[in-house]
Length: 345
Image: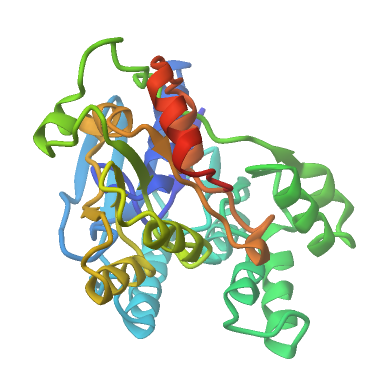
């Protein structure tokens, strides 16, 4: 079977949606299918331009033109979306291109509408992998009023996007319930909804007992320090106030170190807190490359995960699956965590 996968971002870019899509594409290829990906040539932050054509682990990757303003401003992000939609539509309209099925993700928002337009023209199947539910995430962010005119208009687009789907996968039961509310008047779409939880990378495993991960050595985090780490996207759906309050409460205890690794819309909140109070024992790091993710995660004693209550059911923090692989092997870490703080995610 010839399967086309669509998402704005794809490896080597660090966006989690692209990483998971690559795992799926490799699995499909291993099962004898032909998997091809359409994505943007631009990196998540707009700073890098990737090769237009590439084969990765047997998966054909076709990167199409789009602007590269990145995530710094809403207008720039919307323009990146618009140019990606346009370039994708042109590529899908080619007469010589007819896959058996198209699977669309939700980056950028409503890209599934472009996929639906293409499958109706070519009389093929369409599936959707829903990682963010629109317009619910916009309402959770406060960008529009839930139930208002714009919300109802976008909800109608969601129904149009998903109504003819042969398969709709969500990340959890809460997300599936939200989708069912949107699609309650479309029985076929309701029946197409399935739950597909995210997974951890197969090469992630605990660090050997008694050995210190290279990152911990490089950063000179002492063996008697308790390292609490938030790793990944610092998006609008996450909370950091509680972590920062705990860091302020414990700032006189230099054996507790708070590490925030990654980027996103709310990284500036962490930076601003540290600038206001340099005594906070906070360290900021960039995203961890996939090839060093294992040592990166194993370098922490406690991992931090957060989700704002208003975003419940709109998304699932993908960092959770990467964290679950590493079980604690030293009683010391558990004792230190109990002594200093309790982390409620």
